[in-house]
Amino acid sequence: MMIKICGITNQSDADMCVKAGASALGFNFYLKSPRYIRPADAARISAGVVRVGVFVNEPVEAVERIAREAHLDVAQVYGGAAPKSVRVWRACRIDEFSDELLEWAEAVLVDTPSAELTGGTGQTFDWTLARGLAPQVIVAGGLDGGNVRAAIEASRPWGVDACSRLESSPGRKDPDKVRKFIKAAFNA
Image (cartoon, rainbow, N blue to C red; front, side, top):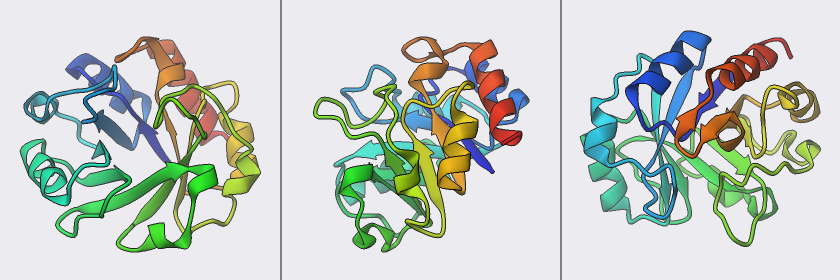
């Protein structure tokens, strides 16, 4: 099970998530996000796991430049074209999934529909809708230690991704919530 903790903004949270067993850390490069991190700051955070950059409607050139600057392994792309110079996880709201997203994508992340936010809503969706969408599906949206096992059982994903429900405040992870989430995901 690939377990990604998104919205990393500092080294202490990164260290804690890796120690708890996260397989990937997400860095948000969307300016409107309360979890936004500058590429240079993300580059200074060492991880030892897969480093994923989150992009929303960014031009390919910007994604490629930031991926190099921030030392990313994967670009998680909402909207826009997928770059070819870095591994790509396409991201969408579950109601916007289409087979076109699989082009140039190693994985597809599906999240909760929202009129206001692209992700990080803290809200769940019907996880059975994600089952079998793609060879490597990542389920996101409102996951925490109390519901991740149910999400995994319902969707049978390649991975899970959590952010806002694991925080004490936007961009600050709660160690107890992170540990409970990772333990529950591994025990699903």
